[in-house]
Image (cartoon, rainbow, N blue to C red):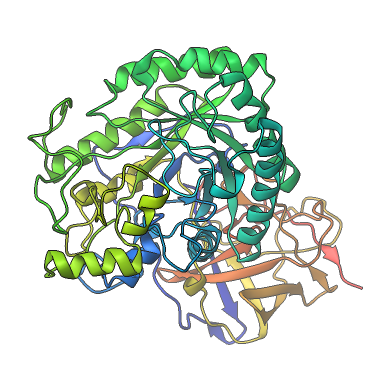
Length: 547
């Protein structure tokens, strides 16, 4: 991690006002390193993701999450502080009966996804939008099309998929989400949106992928299958190639108690990556830490379950070891292995309630896996139900982080992520900006030529929404951050063609970090992007002259 600490020095002294401390990354012996991940993917960082699609309904039901000290805290902050950099959220088309009655399962419509994406972006976490193209759960056992699409031809469903995808993504982005990936279908093992012919399915995949491309060509397009031990993955990838489906990521669900060994999973995914030149990742995984139940509704797996193989202890330590191994298994794929998402680590029920009291929350808040109203759409629903994954959560039943949540801190490389409340309060005024590592001051000569000895230039900091603009007091040069930098720190450059960069000032120890806010996150400013040591060289800068 290349951290560039910068001291902001007022002419009368050092100003360290109103800042919050940065999270500290603990070193653990179970660290996982992605040594060759492409800079084109998440800035060169592995995806350390979680799917918390149920979170709004869980919060509505009264579940409280707590930080390491036991104090109530925003779960998005807790996740970000533990190294999570991506949130996954499912989207159902119309998860209700049309009369105001939700099907449950988190009430996972576009509106909910937009709110989850907005909150994730506040803490620097990107969003993977997981379209099921169904009104309720889509998985290998069921892929029913939305009620409004039933009876449509494959071509008509393709058109509907395109329109729904594009419109939904625009809505989610407008809410403030930082969309980095979009999943076209969920666990589509030769079944998708009511079809079971893989070649017809590919036509619908194309429609969804085209919508993502037209929305934003930089967003990665993901296709998702379940269980790499089936032996079908190579055939799926082969048909996708034959049909010229334009996608970026071949993703898998991998639940170790159902889906074989991590070594076999690595082998299967590596073959996909090398044969078809696709990124690969685990987009769903989980493991139990206890056999107990926390919400009066049974667990999908426990020590007495049949048809499962537990390769780790059912304990917090076993859960931690399992998740670490899953991250390592994807890293072992090589440069095309890009990361892991844990499925529903916060799907809890409020504690101290009877079954009847829990059922009321499931029914009214949608915080369980289904409500009775879902029976009209999903024949597998018998009655209202709760969470069957709370014993696989990464929080205890009373909302405290478990040891496995620290795994994300120990998957490298990592870059600091912008969080809104980190911004220190600085008064408008003129400052000297000095690099703590080199002792040199930020300088701007306007020409872009190397400056052999840095000059002490005053910079005018002016507060704007979400941060500060920084203008040179000598020559009126306004800084611009080059957003295309592949380094862990962004250098100042005029090549963006923009003069509207906004910066945040964050306290770190006795100094301040200068971060540039670009696309919903921020990175540490570095004036010379080929710096090889912490405390980047401040002997080169280029800026845009203001009108």
